[in-house]
Length: 166
Image (cartoon, rainbow, N blue to C red; front, side):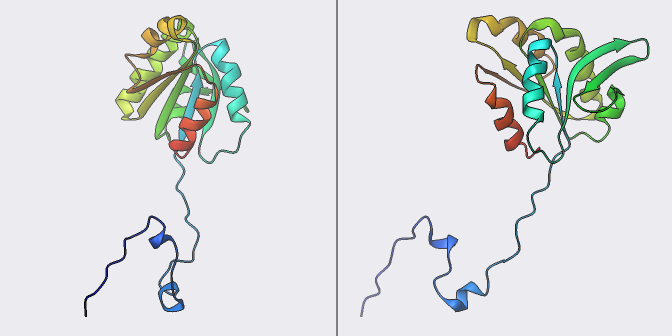
């Protein structure tokens, strides 16, 4: 008698074939760990994008619409709540996403990038703009973002945060 082999289908592991097999399946829901993400808009155009994204449901993400230089250093203005220092905003952060539409935020990008480097916080940059016109913003973010994406679709901010489990 020869044994026949059946191909393993892509969904074979997704369902138990018998009650005996089903009892070994984990029944508890998967509890995803959220990252403490900080999303910082570096210019006025990016602020509108960040405000729209902040309206969604997020676990560990905090959204800031602007970075302002003060005599005490860089102060971030959150979408909701009072201003906070850069050090306080970055203290619990796992990842910082810098959003730009122009090169207006080059100064704050440098300060935030340096602070993240010292703390070992991963930085990602997202330039929302169309090809040629996004060049100055890319130049402003490139030295400070370990990962840099140029996109003409504002929804990519949401997609990146979802992928980062923010």
